[in-house]
View 1 (cartoon, rainbow, N blue to C red):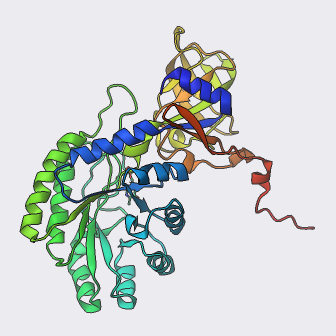
View 2 (cartoon, helix red, strand yellow; view 1 turned 135 degrees about the vertical axis):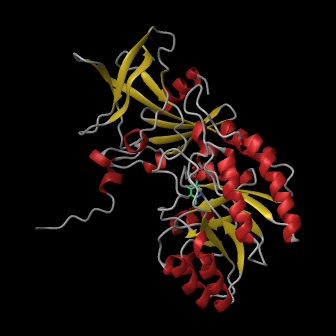
View 3 (spheres, rainbow, N blue to C red; view 1 turned 45 degrees about the vertical axis):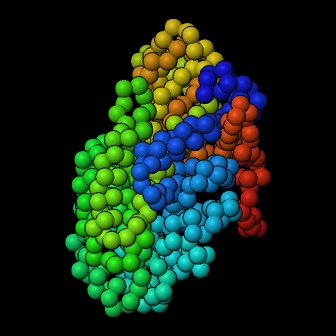
Length: 401
Ligand SMILES: *Cc1c(COP(=O)(O)O)cnc(C)c1O
């Protein structure tokens, strides 16, 4: 989106504000499906924990996407958005058998990632098809907070426990219809990913009744100019070739599934915040905005570097700023960032604010969560109202003491 479009949206709906560009979500979806156009049955399950606004879910549903969910509430949200149960996969970690049974009752694809639940579920519901999440033990990323395939990760069933998996399947006569891996965010190296894929193929050979292979996600998106991003096209070429060969070997057509979150929505998002104070200190110039890590926690949580632009004065002289929030503890969005000269009242736009931004927002400091807007075919649609004081009071029980 252009700065002047963002500015007009900010004027209409106020700050702080999340704005999502529908066209970017659509082009990312198309990019991925085009990269795998030679695969007969391709399934993209959008990992909705990245951005779970109903209008975004509906937009992706319209494109043919399925949904990857990690909680029973996300399953319910997906059903509410109109996804049919067979278009939803439920991939939780560390949840109770009860919750998995509840999801099964709703008819969605179950994906199990530990032996204990696999055994219990298989014994009780041998006829409900189940996908197994394996951990291939590869590190496909740079940041250990978000690489989930490695040896000490809590995700998936270790590939070394395959004999145990097979024993459970044989004893319970349960039906395994899919094999899944998700090696975590940030696939920097396609070769590492393909190596993990080989482990998935090897595992798949042990199961006779598979309908799909799910390769998870971890596509890396650029945060700033010059950042490396996953070469989806190259990956499409290489994995397609291997996948088609595997299908032949397996003797049956399979669905190839992915579950991207970040890749589909990260770059579509802009977080707009207004500068309340410009504060010159002896060491730096702070630009304090009308928001904080209660609305955008990624810089504080992961050290994410969201590119920041001054959309009120995009042509000014560049200076160095530390952009900080109003939360009463360390609350830094960026330090020593080159931004065009900031005046109080200016609006700053944070890029890559589509994934894991609003969904991680909280009411810390008793602040309202921001509103959300979807920019679709040249029009701004409010898709979530700004909260009000009633939202802060909701669910609180006042007792006489
Ligand atoms: C979070 C998650 C994803 C999405 O990861 P991205 O890096 O956002 O693409 C996919 N699959 C599972 C199981 C997840 O938990």
